[in-house]
Length: 205
Image (tube, rainbow, N blue to C red; front, side):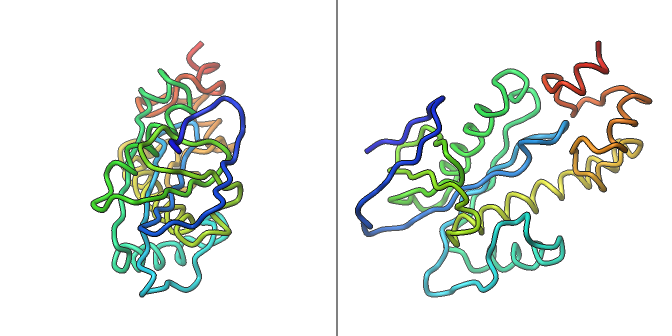
């Protein structure tokens, strides 16, 4: 069975649990008005379980950082990939997310026999894949990918804040907060803003 992307929400049900390595995949950054969308793929070592894995949104920043360091140290392998602002604007955010996920899976040092993806859509990859709604809270490898992707993107936002401090990226991570929208109105868009997103498009118009 080959995975495929679809405009229809779907979840592939696998009625077997084959041998081999399983990778969890998740993304961070679909909603913000600026910056790339980041995806991570993680193959955990079953001999080294990591306590406390959960949906990254449910964890404090400090806990995410701690778990991310543990994941990177103990996982069999981990890959992080991005789709750029230019790709988001050209493809749309869904297709850019699928692209980042595909790149993350392709970047794994070890090839998994199955891939478990958070959500209801799948990237086009050459591995059997299953989409799991709420998987970031249910499947440890997806939780791990969620944490790694979120921490990676948050670090990128801190770097962006140094380049463009007037926007407050360190605080809101690119999301459309009142502070961010006010800065957009006052200063216009920076090169890392997503031109295809309505609040940014309105400012540019």
